[in-house]
Image (cartoon, rainbow, N blue to C red):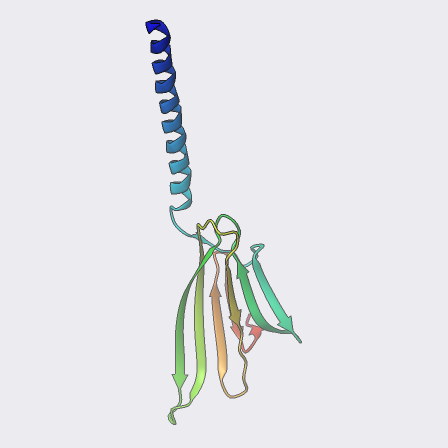
Length: 139
């Protein structure tokens, strides 16, 4: 009887070791994904450019699993004339994608255009900077 009991303890100890190893591997994978944000590219599958009449009207950025959390860093600068009217508005977006267990995260930018104000959008991606002035891509 004592011999069988000893075998049961050995099996239980090995089971605990296997569970511990599995937990360590899982934690290593999670830490790898949480290690920081990834830079998005302008030609990534989740980047969509909506246009109407040759003018860019909206940019939609969908995160791709497992980097679904879209993290924009937005800065805004405006130029005002002597009368206090805004003549130029520049918005700069730098995009990163962070790890998230959600299936999809979306960030939308509506591109504005006007005759009396110059709207400039600078979208900083990993591969290039896209400059849009009043809905048209500047070269």
